[in-house]
Length: 89
Image (cartoon, rainbow, N blue to C red; front, side, top):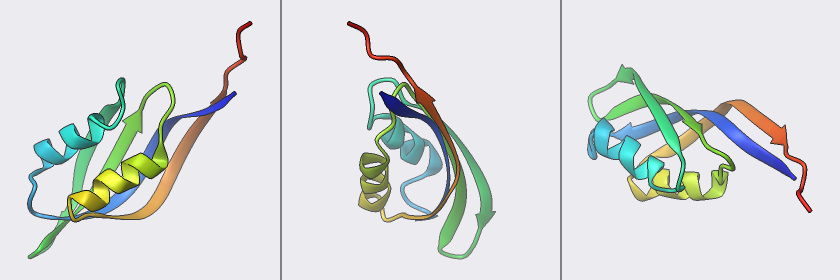
């Protein structure tokens, strides 16, 4: 089974929620998600973020839905790490 284990995303979001809450809500999408968030740029109404998300099997659709639910938008997927994990049995 091929799994996505790391994503690096370029995200635009409003100032609220704050970056701590934003990162926590993204981490809450999966049981083992780890989120590293860096603010790249701050404008009058928005912030541009670099999100690095890692976990055993990332769900990009659920991550994007969480971003949208907080008023953000996914601008690009800048890096992907995928792994072929042999099925046991």
